[in-house]
Picture 1 (tube, helix red, strand yellow):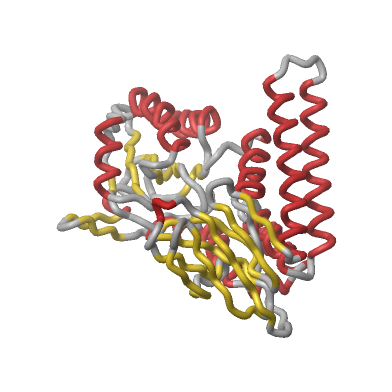
Picture 2 (tube, rainbow, N blue to C red; picture 1 turned 45 degrees about the vertical axis):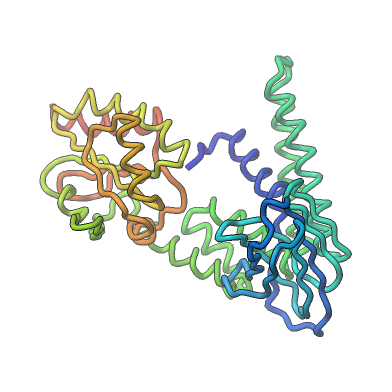
Length: 358
């Protein structure tokens, strides 16, 4: 999970907006119209099968074989759909499938379309891209009014996003923006937004996120741990093998491919060196990862604590974990004392807990 530092927050959202060329899905009915989608690759992808799927529910919409670096799909669409391109099992871009012609260049990440929704989203993404570049320039500068200037760009970013949502709260563009924002909300804030915009609750991804938020709330600070079981080959492990057995336990939910996860191991190693012999147990839970990659990362980064490997989505679904690393501190009875902290904030929570052992 990236830091909530404003720089990373803005840049990650900008990256999502103008690199992914995101689109949307509508629940409303509309007259059926023709669409034509041309997707450009390199010749290296020739003969591979390209799928176009519904981003919201994962249903396949269309498919085509890449020939001479190009795949063309033609058909009919009523209500606009946020389409995800999948080539040979890998994501290849997103766009709004709507009546008209659309061209997606997977090499440049550019989308051109005769459809109004794609055009509107492209304009919005271009504005965010411009603000992002300006933010980077100022952030790297030594300007005397640097902090004030950064806040000014942040205000423009928020104003542009709010304006876009206000103009499209009743359609699929509003859904896309709602979903982007929803992941950052607390469970209570998320439910409050659904009260204001009840139509959003009908989308498949929002329904799934709603369940995740409820699970997050039920495993927040002050709640008892929820047990889970993970099988990795012949080895079967439970969280209760490590948590709730009379000792403080720090549990790191992580993955080998996750840069922030690997960076946070420096903090965890410092805590391990200081407290592993003083009553604090450590546990890693590898999620969303291939076991072989997890094992390699353990060796490469010399992680000394026990590991539950091949957990995949079992614990993240149960605990409503949307981003990693997610580090949870359990007391000797298995109650959650700290959740989602990193760096200095995590160290402070652990040190306060360890005072009980002095």
